[in-house]
Length: 317
Ligand code: GLU
Image (tube, rainbow, N blue to C red; front, side):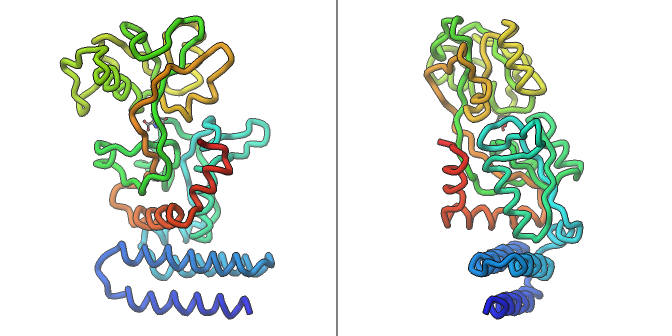
């Protein structure tokens, strides 16, 4: 019974190949690859036995090979999807130090993308400062690492439809007396290099009338030279900012709330405000045939409740 379902899926894939073979656009082909992969996945879900599930994976790989772009096929041929992820963001990308295992919604999403291609997944830990270099060099195929979609970044990389929206906030030592944005006036704040955090904080302070905003330009803003009412120290990773906060090297630690959670110890507190919505997307190389393939998957998983399920499973608000 199950074999018949799979045969039908394969047949459908072949018809799609024929239909799209002479088309000029990349998106319809990749869109159909994703659809075919999903049909095969559903068929596998109905089946149940392990050997049949293995068969369904092959069907996915065959379908992707037939109708997707060369970029997608290169990953299928390699047999491994290489993904840049975070290792200390609970619920998103977190690595168990003892077992080396990664977990979180971004890990599950990466595994699902690999599954739809019928390939294994290999994780590389990235930071805000390293994720784009690794993508540009081709060391990784995509980034699922609390990577905020911005207009500026879209000029250099492709992003999927957002799968989650977070906000920026600020973590301080409880005994600092800093309770809100206004108390950050003339303070020094630790941020990660390559992040949106400093710019978001200055924009929020301007909006709230705490700093004047003279000379603020989102396009040219540089945390290392900004001194109007607040200053910044940039670090390569978040553990170092946390240590700097404990040592009093900085007065506050600013980044997305999801990232701050792991550094929120008993002696620390968030300020009252959260600001600057951060939409996370899957980043791929600009112009890659893989971008549209990934976007189709993400769009489908947003529509069918898969992403909501992952958000709930991982205890994310
Ligand atoms: N999400 C923010 C960004 O993409 C914070 C940095 C980070 O993700 O590590 O800039």
